[in-house]
Image (cartoon, rainbow, N blue to C red; front, side, top):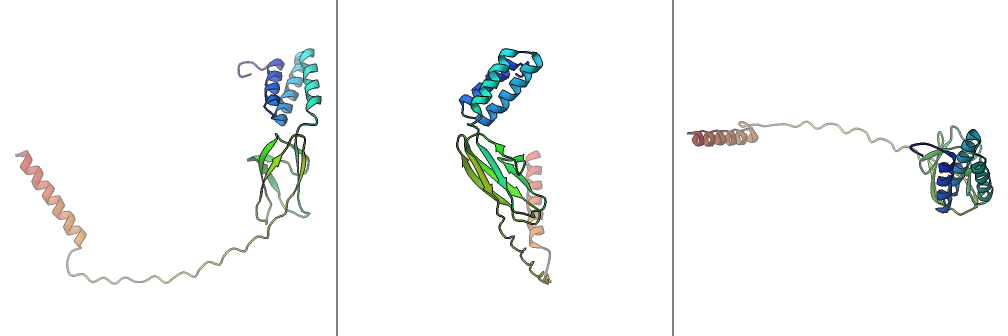
Length: 174
């Protein structure tokens, strides 16, 4: 497929996906194989793809996401991919992570398991958004009073180390 996309190659990929139990992925590949076969007038691949699609019809799991009324600007993701809310979403069997966000609502997240041929309705219920915690009042900055009776200790130590290194280098040079 990377070198040259053909209906037969796409059909073979779809069969491999179906054999691995990835029915939604296989369905999409069978549809693509059928469409390529129609374009290239490959009747045999078209017929095979149509039969495979008919056989997959009841095996593809579906997820329907339902939202409460009057939710503003909702968006949903399944396994990090954006999806439409409302119409059935065809997914491969297995575990999926659903995340729904809406304006003014706390995020909704759910992990779910879909079986072969299952249609699952997920009713989203947003938890009450907790009010933002009050910011603590800024503490007054304390003024540090310094009393000095000479040069800072760090500067004296650093100067001593530098003088020792210079003396050692001079002796080694001689």
